[in-house]
Image (cartoon, rainbow, N blue to C red; front, top):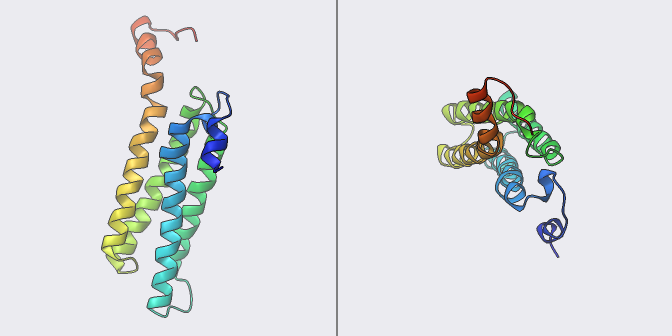
Length: 151
């Protein structure tokens, strides 16, 4: 029995119990971080880089930061995730920017960087569903009424 099987047998309001969130956002982010480390470590071996340069170090730190933040979101609910989405989005965009610089400098092959960048964009789009669309009816009601809607 895998992790996802265990999760789908449980119930609760936290996002860890949402198969969609767990599979499409958390696990995808974990795969992005794994790919970043695989590519950077492979680059160091292929090009015989003895010391990790500043850029690859920042990319690795940023990747781990994203994964750490994402693990905290698993304890959020649909209603509390919005507060954390801004920081998660900022960290993903920062990682994407680091990868762009790494591709421009030749530290990361453009093909690899582009694939990871596309996956980051996909995660950001999926996160939008949790940060906005799930709360959109309430937000629209608040705008129409000029005051917060009752939960």
